[in-house]
Image (cartoon, rainbow, N blue to C red; front, side, top):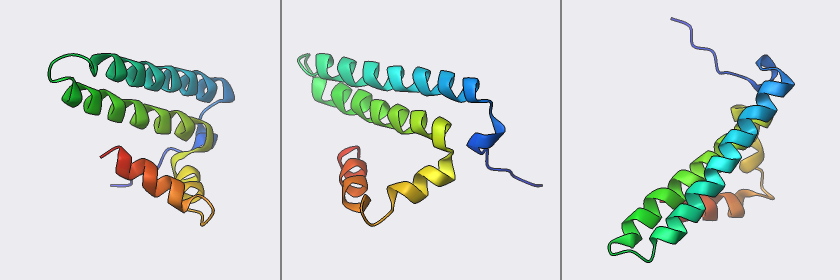
Amino acid sequence: LSFKVLDASTLSFGTRVKWFGICFIAGIACSILGTALLWLPKGIKLFAVFYTLGNIAALASTCFLMGPLKQLKAMFEPTRLIATVVMLVSSI
C-alpha cells in the first residue's frame, strides 16, 4: 500500500482558504466556549477539553494554507522552537 501525505499544493487555493477559515473559526469558538465553561462546576475539565480542541483546530487551519510537512518544519525552526514547545506543553 502506498500512503501519500496530502500537500497544500494538491488543493486549490479557494479550498485551502475555505478550510483555513472553517478550522480557524472553530478553534476560536472552542477556546471561547472553554473559557465560558470554566465557571461551571467541573468546568476545569471542560475548559481543558475545549481549549485543547481549539488549539488543535487552529493548528489544522494553518496546515491547510502551508501543508502539514512545511508547517512542522517551520514550527521546529530554531527561532520558533521555544514557542512551539510552550504551546504544545500548555495544550497537554
